[in-house]
Structure formats: C-alpha cells, structure tokens
Length: 225
Image (cartoon, rainbow, N blue to C red; front, side, top):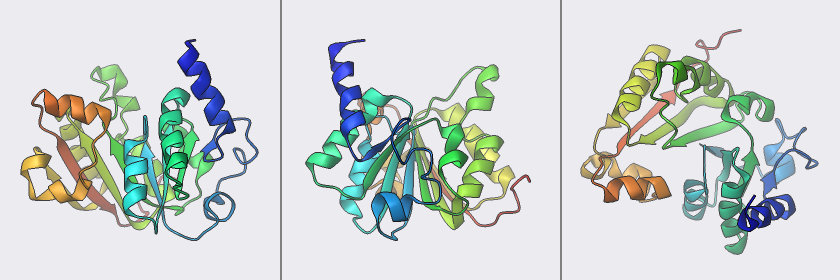
C-alpha cells in the first residue's frame, strides 16, 4: 500500500463524517441517519459509487437544507471528499464505506428522498449484467429505501449501458422518465447543476457525449416480498 493511501485510510478512520466498519454507528445507523448522524430532519440524498465525492460535496454546497451521503467501497477515494467537506465546514455531508448492493443494511424503507448514480461501471460483458446498478435487483432495492415520489438520476458516457437502463427502468414502471443522449446540448443541462466528476471531465475533454436521465419511483408494487 502506498504512503498516500495509508494516510487517507487513517483520515477516514478519524473523520467524523465517515461511517465504515468498526465505527460505533456503522451497525446501528439503519433508520437513524437523521437523528444520530445529521441530527436534523432534512431529506437524505445518496450518491452511489461516489468516488471522490464530487457530487456529494457539490450538491451539499448548493442545498444546505438537504443531507447528502456519498457511498463507495474505496476508502482512499472517500477520504478526498470527506476532507473537502470538513475543510469547507459542510455539516450536511456524510460518507458510507460500503457496497451498493448492501444498501438495505444501512437504510430503512422510505428513508431516502433522492439517489444519484454518476458514471458507474457499465459492466460490458454479459456475465456482468447482474452487477449493473440499474438492473432489476438494484431497482428493487432503490424502490424500498426511497420515499414514494423519490427521484433517481443517472449520468454516464456509456450508451449501451444507458440504453439498458432506459429499458429496465421502463419495465420497472417508474414515471416521468426523462432523458437525453447529449446532456450539454439539452434543455436538461440545468438538472446536473454544472457539477462534473473527474471521469466526466475526462470523457467530455475527449469529445464524448454525456447521457442523463431522471425518473420518479411512484409506488411500491414493484417490490418483491
């Protein structure tokens, strides 16, 4: 392990805005994010696969009346966003070191108001479809933890993955599914608030178009009991 990674892992262990295995609230936070972590009743917004937390921190700056949680399994990446939030005094930011398919371990039904998925691994191979973050299994999880009328946002440069996501969301029965294949040339450009992830900057610099969609989870009938 590099010296830089060692430093960052030590930082997230010490930083109060990060939850990971071994910390006191890690196993008891489900259903208690507002009361025990943020200590307010504001809506909770998730960024899945947050990386260095560009969206988590960027949105928190713009919307102090909401709570934002960046979720990623890579601790050295989380450290970057965690440190930035602390440096800026953003009390409405938290980070959870966990895998996205474990969301139900950490969030109660209807505990989340909004979800952002920004440039996830598209898992090109057929064998990787079950790990795509918009497959039916993941949509069932989102549908459980998100409030009725909660919003899902997706940004990706990968067109096959985006087309797949449009199909799975349509089949799942979301409403107000709105999308564009070229975000920066679309009227929907305002919806991403001008925030770019590191990957997004790389893709746009190379001339790639950015795909974006948003939709509303309007009922719980899709949930498998």
